[in-house]
Image (tube, rainbow, N blue to C red; front, side):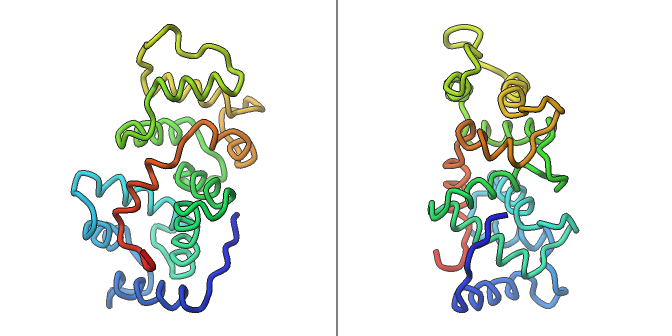
Length: 200
């Protein structure tokens, strides 16, 4: 995992925000509390997508709630990725966002969900994805000029490109090798920029 240094000032700021979000309703952050915070800076139709991405990244132990240490390290990771401070941070952020069940692998159903999210927020156009896949040596994956490729077809193509050992799932090493070249995270960062985080 990407380890990012946290200065005392940032940590204190994160702690203040975390306590505001949790309120007097326990010690961990729930999905509903996160959605409430995200809703303050986002359009309603984008709320569920943003909250889904954030919860997947922040709930690192898959407990269903977010502890302060998960929150602080997750927000630091998101900010470092968004601000292009670290290539490893961007890769780690993307991997955590895709590994929804926290198994340590990206499974086909998780990849399909992510392809649909990226298509929904304008971060993955079928023609762009085809060009990316062709650049990594997979040949002509478009099946013809200008043909629109479905989310299922794109998922199959991404799986074929990234799943080097053919075991039906994508390891972190496999994803780090090719994932960033195939999936542009800039649309996700643009969407997350609407979320009020400390230091923004």
